[in-house]
Image (cartoon, rainbow, N blue to C red; front, side, top):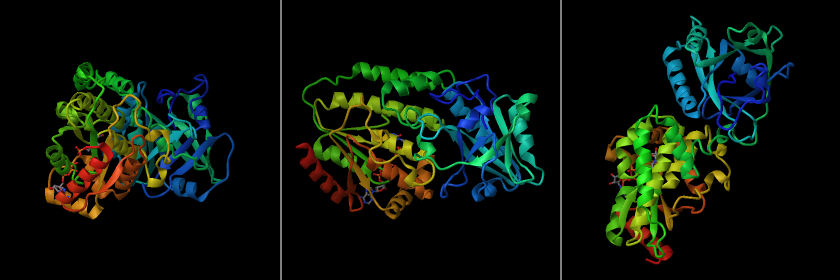
Length: 430
Ligand SMILES: Nc1ncnc2c1ncn2[C@@H]1O[C@H](COP(=O)(O)OP(=O)(O)OP(=O)(O)O)[C@@H](O)[C@H]1O
Ligand SMILES: Nc1ccn([C@@H]2O[C@H](COP(=O)(O)O)[C@@H](O)[C@H]2O)c(=O)n1
């Protein structure tokens, strides 16, 4: 389905002299029809396998292709994948279905490679022309699926190389793996556990995203200025929650009530870059937010030497949104409670207390509508995508060391403040 040239992060195909297609035979392929149904899994084999109804439904009609961007570096791969999706969505005629797909080594971290599956039932059979054009630009690898008269499905590479073109494999059903494939690449692609890892991503982007250099300079500056080694530190209280749960309202009130310093992540100094990085694929966007936490951490270290510090969003937000976006489908696909994915980064300053504001989806929507401000794309998704909101909420609650305490934020602002002050006094001796 994809070629050797598409190097997945941390994983390299072992034998480059083998046929390209043959090297995909150790992998399992996943096609995601929609967020609510289970993906369809299949493998490639030199022998025909059993037939099953799911494969029949997927392969049963139209012309079928899978496509993947071909790139060397992870930054280029991530960006090309997004460009490929845009190009396919723009060029494919009505009657073509475009599904997210991926191939992976079952339960092997970092083995996931993403692509797209096309099913063309359009009047003009436009998909073949579109994928061939994209391939001619030199950035895309295409596999074609056909049906034999006896009902077996076959996979072959769409290529100019005759030997490669003639190599054919059977499509056979594969069992669902223990861990959902979309969880395999989270570490250091969606969630970063050390500053150096996020830093490297922005370094790798600096040619294509010049703003990366400015962000890295700010990280350096803040690290130099930070003084995290003082003995006595005032409490550091983080307020977390989905959009419009009342974080801004509460953090401002807490600042006044406690005579505290109010900080946020991402910090003010990154505000000018946010839109730019929000438009980038997850690898780059998440690295940007991860670095934002380290800048905020340096500010916390300085400020907490002389006053309590309140922080509006911090690592819980970065990780929860990243995990919920990376993991496709339902909440059950999230990494299990206790997974290393939910562990706090070893080099990031830990707060004294993390409070997660919680309101019902209806109340949140009422507040959002009442406020009427622009929302980021991700926040708009929260509104329309119930599944995504549930995954963010659940991921927040699974994060460990420190875990968050859930606060019912549906009462009046004064009541919420009262409740939270009470918690802070109990937990932080303030
Ligand atoms: N306890 C509350 N009861 C009713 N309305 C509230 C309460 N707290 C905040 N609001 C209102 O809800 C809206 C969202 O609040 P706020 O801006 O504090 O949320 P937020 O979590 O900071 O959102 P964002 O993450 O988007 O910045 C505002 O209009 C605010 O006045
Ligand atoms: N520490 C943080 C803070 C935010 N994000 C990302 O930003 C979005 C929500 O921020 P708002 O300012 O709109 O409330 C959300 O999409 C998060 O992905 C983050 O990653 N880390």
